[in-house]
Every structure is written in structure tokens, then in C-alpha cells.
Amino acid sequence: MTTNSVGKRIKFVRTNNLESPVRFAKKIGVDWRFVPQWENDEAIPEMSALLKITKLFNVSVDWLKDGESAG
Image (tube, rainbow, N blue to C red):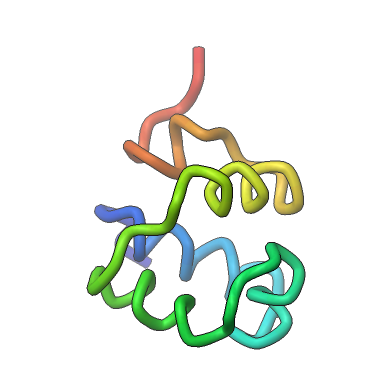
């Protein structure tokens, strides 16, 4: 899967963890309707949502935001 945008990386994390948009949104504390908007690059998540994704799904902020590994 190409992960060349924040939205594509969010979708990668969600699908790789076998989460539906509804369950994914519930885990990070947002309305589920935001998830498809993020994944289609129609909206950008707030930093608080990005941080929850990184903590819950064990990915780095650098990778999620920029596609780069930390370090």
C-alpha cells in the first residue's frame, strides 16, 4: 500500500490492525465520520488525534505526519 500522505498512513494503521472506521474512531475519541475524511485526504486530523493514534497503535509521530522513521 502506498503511504504517501497522512490519510494513507492512517488508513494503513487502521486496516493493518483490522479496525473498522467506527471502532478506530471510538478508540481515539472522535466521531467516526472523520476517519474516511482523513483517509481520503479531505481533512487533516488534529494533533491530539494523531497523538492518540501513535500511542494506541505503536507508530511514531514522525512516520504518521511525514512518512519518515524517527531517529
